[in-house]
View 1 (spheres, rainbow, N blue to C red):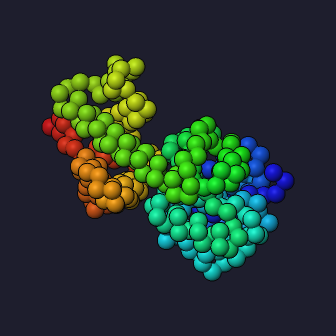
View 2: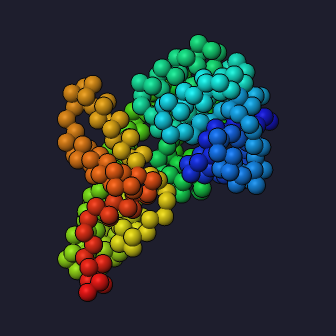
View 3: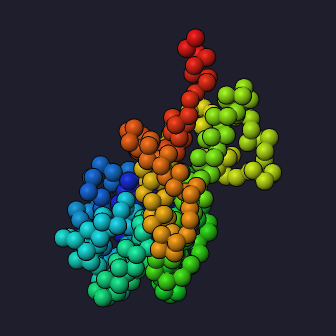
Amino acid sequence: MSHSIALIGAGAMGGAIGARLARTGTALRVFDRNAAQMQPLVALGATATGSAAEAAAGAPAVILSLNSARIVRAAVFGEDGVAAGAAPGTLIIDMSSIDPASTQELAREAHERGLRWVDSPLSGGAPKAAIGQLTLMQGGAEDDVAEAQRVLAQVAANQTRMGAAGAGQTTKLINQVLCGLNFLAVAEATALAEAAGVAAERIPAALAGGRADSAILQEYMPRFAGRDYRPTGRIDNMVKDLDGARDLARLSHTPMPLTVVCAEVHRLLTARGLGDQDQAALMEFFPNPLAKEASR
């Protein structure tokens, strides 16, 4: 595209998305309330702006990467928000993870103001964004999703339209149920391996290709075993997502006992001050027999 794309939100995830776009030739106009978070993107050639409205001015598409529906609403429809600067027909691509009902309301309001809306939450985190291999699940009108997929082609290896506005967010909640349960299962299995005296870091190779294998097993059991807490996500974000899945399940009277337990483990760790830590910090829920032996 000949025009710059706007990016609202340059935190851990938005920064990774922006960096990948900048490195692959996309001109970016970026806004974040924390000016320091824009600087790495500025170093890659992006233009820092003073408001979401300024970032959106003249941009055919605006990417949002924010933490909650409340923040998304403020960034788009609040004072100096995207809607104040965007031209009619501008495509808003919301890559935040928020609830489907809020997304449907936001999309309706956008359409009333002459703007287009695609929800495009992601799976893969910052590491996959950095190499252009995100998985995106999208909701919106067919033509709008097709345009969003062109905008995001350099950051994603798999993009799928799931239906109308909100369908992408619903699919993301299902993704988070699968991820959350898998993270907790692998952490629990790591704790058992350590207690039983088996080298947990060797288990992924031993189980590769079997039914227990998964991307989370391969990436995270070595990290769990090594207490490698490098940030690639947040425990409190998983609480938000699993609570969202539970709320959605209530509407259809769908029982989700394992999801509730998983959410409570994440909530407990958040209450202990670990909400901003990576999923690898799930190991703090379990006793560490190796640490006990080292202290003897």
